[in-house]
Amino acid sequence: MASTTPIASPPPAPAPPVTRKSTSTGRAGDKVFLGLSRGSGILLLVIMASIAVFLSYRAALAISKDQGNFLTTLDWNPAGNPPVFGIAVLLFGTVVSSIVAMAIAVPIAVGIALFISHYAPRRLAAPLAYVVDLLAAVPSIIYGIWGALFLVPYLEGLNLWLDEFFGWTYIFEKTEIGVARSLFTVGVLLAIMILPIVTSVSREVFLQVPQMNEEAALALGATRWEVIRMSVLPFGRSGVISASMLGLGRALGETMAVATVLSPSFVISLHLLNPGGGTFAQNIAAKFDEANELGRDALIASGLVLFILTLLVNGAARLIIARRKEYSGANA
Amino acid sequence: MAKRIDVSGLSAFYGSHKAIEDISMTVEPRSVTAFIGPSGCGKSTFLRTLNRMHEVTPGGRVEGKVLLDDENLYGSAVDPVAVRRTVGMVFQRPNPFPTMSIFDNVAAGLRLNGSYKKNRLAEVVEKSLKGSNLWNEVKDRLNKPGSSLSGGQQQRLCIARAIAVEPDVLLMDEPCSALDPISTLAIEDLIGELKERFTIVIVTHNMQQAARVSDRTAFFNLSAVGQPGKLIEIDETERIFANPSVQATEDYISGRFG
Image (cartoon, rainbow over all chains, first blue to last red; front, side, top):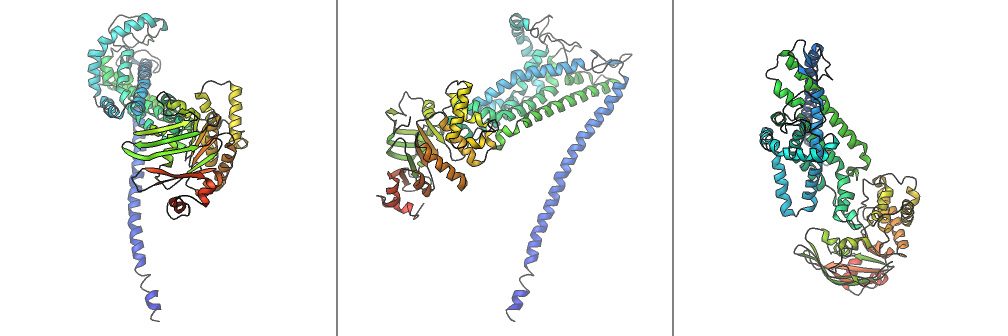
């Protein structure tokens, strides 16, 4: 009797409050956190959707009044009578300058990243990585000014050389006299601007290659370059692609630097060294202030195309990364 | 091809820390030699000095001599890369190249050594996979990634990769410690077959494994944490397990420490 009562009543009584208390605070925390994270996720979708709706609505207004073909017209005159404008030149200029930038920046960035992660002595690697990161801290208007005052005059020599020896490629044939305010120069400038982001993301990926992957190659008698080819680059491939896409995103949308360097014109020419051309962002920056209502809507329509282009590029990058997922280093 | 290893007065360092001190031993060709000892006694470090992998670690440094037949691996004119092509290694955790197919994994070492004709390459890959008892399990999916195999299969794939280049010596650093008992048994059987062709050195934490697979056993120990590891004794495996000449060996084997 004396033993059953203490066992029966007191222990169950204190025990439940303790557990209930701890789980209930846990549940409240879970709820708050669930709400926060779900809210942020939904907010993101709402923002994306409202940007898309806003751009589409204003763009539709403009395109319905366009008397030219919005996709193919080589002119931008929304204030004219009749209003005529098209994005062909802008699409061409944006894509071409970004391709030039990627072609220059990605190999150099991968080289720098490999040097910092696998070749440089540690005393040198850290400062070098810091200097490259510092390039990213320079505001783009500074790049623009530097590009216009330094790059444009000093690239003329390179232009002449390219014209003389690679003129037969058509791309590097310079048919117009004029300073180097060309898509090629813009591409070079963009390459410098996207170098730090591509470099630092690639470097981080290369540093994450598991030691056992590198030792697998070393133990087979691989030289340092062979280790990089067999272990580091395959592991880092998808990372380098993502890094390039981040850079490409910046190159596609870069505004001030391009607007400062380029001398805009509404022609499409594959002679990349000729001055002229235009990009979406540069065109918007140059024309937005003076545009009338239709002009602004027309610029917004061009912005919508840039938006879609960026989405497509990112989607393509994801496809490339996903396609070889079972071969990627991530599931090793 | 199997060669004798002759180590004399070998010490290895990580920066200023001496990890192993003054080790001398002889490893006979076409035999299995097992290294046992408590954690941190330097047996893995010593193994990695035998193919010059130790110096890959930042600060890694070696003093002393390792003769492979009559050639000193640490001679001034010797290229460590060339050493690693003749002394193969299998690691604790299976490490196939994750982005390569099964075929390419086995062919990787061959391709480093020069160009092979396609048929010749396929022959060597088949022979190596048969040599590691993996052929029947993978012959229909040679172009699937190596990382799609089970752990035990991956380890046998790594053995196939190592023996494909016909090394003089095969080093194994706890090759079964990440595997289940069935896979372990498969690897142990394989070691028994491979010793017909190669000189094999295996580090193991599992004393039964050492007793099962090895002809000779070396016991390593360290006097205290932070002190360098030393070779206590090396002898016929039967003697080491039945009647060792040093008390510490008997204490370790009978489970009194370690």
